[in-house]
Amino acid sequence: MRRQAGFTLLEVLVALVVFGFLMVGVMQGTRFGITAWRFQSDGSRRASELEAVDRTLRQLIAQAHPGTLDTPPAFAGAAGGLVFRTLLPQSGGGLAARAVDAAIGLDAQRRMVLRWSVHSAGGRRGAREDVLLAGLDHIELAYWRPAEGGDAAGWQRSWSGPVLPALVRVRLAFPPGDRRHWPDIVAAPMQVRPTE
Image 1 (cartoon, rainbow, N blue to C red):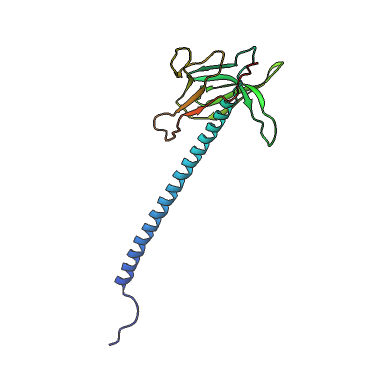
Image 2 (cartoon, helix red, strand yellow; image 1 turned 30 degrees about the vertical axis):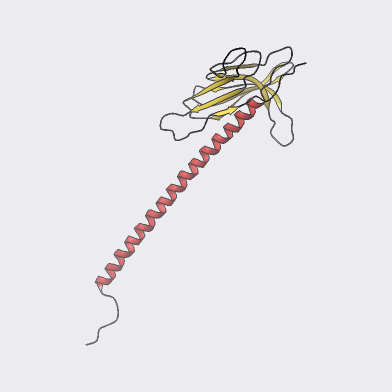
């Protein structure tokens, strides 16, 4: 008696089970890859958002107006906010920066906002508010006072006076459970007050 060529029912069932295990493995690997991609994409988006805030704050603080021979700088710093005169760069290539009166702080929705208006000889014009970063718990600002006149150098929780601080530190505090983290932003006002 001759056997017919083909597969038995048992062989077909074993092949289907092995194929099922392979499909489960492929699906798990795909799911893992998609999850890892989403996680990396979210982390990258959060980092780029924080980098933009970092650059903006550093530039605004670096361009703080130091005052003139007759007037002290328009700069009042507290632990939770800062009011100062600075240069706001124009959008677009090659356009000049504008002098603005600016304030940085948190609003009621826990967003870091930049409130600014154009400074001109006739007073302030066109008040605006731009959200820099949302979802904060609080911000902490500190101001570096160099050693002078017997006083030790150190960080101050507030600042007002005839000169700008040597450094300004901004610490972003996020709510518990928030995965965002950013090192302290430290910037130095770069404009020098005229001496003559």
